[in-house]
Length: 262
Image (tube, rainbow, N blue to C red):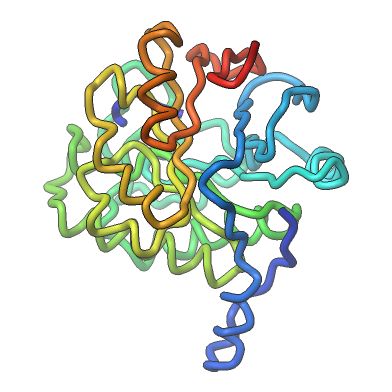
């Protein structure tokens, strides 16, 4: 999960018929705006935190953890990277060299993707979503879906990013998965209609939380992670806006200080 560069559904794929499409859409997780949230992307998952929704890594977390969280009444989101290649992932060889761009500053082993290559990346991300669905997750949080704002090595424009991000929502919904919008408030007007919730990092620190109110107005949750600010500086603002906010460390291990914690 990058700074500034940024429950229970059966997984099915569409077969192309209108009836099939409607059936898949009916199963998509539809959380209310006031659910609580915990994210842990490093270490053995600690399931003891108060949270209606848990987010964990797609590849590193097994079905057993998803089932345990479901048994406790939690919904579960899989984290995956849709905007950058990561050299440690098991599907790293699925990415042809022509889609790999510049390295992400501060994130060794990662390279930006050419999101104009929608057909190639649709297949790769579709496989990731198949795994997400097979493990029983309810939703996906795709990271780095704001490459057009960064030095990727490709001449990416806003229209390329919007088209790619909409494609991600389409293929997630085809599999009965909800999808979260990550760190791109500038595209809220384009993407809110097809995205189901928000996961944002440091929008209070960057003074860019305002656009996410559109999600809350449509009864979709907005989960805010702040890394540098003390809770006293953002919790009251988040509560007033209907956002679900907490302080985390950049390592994204289990530790947190949520606005609703003692």
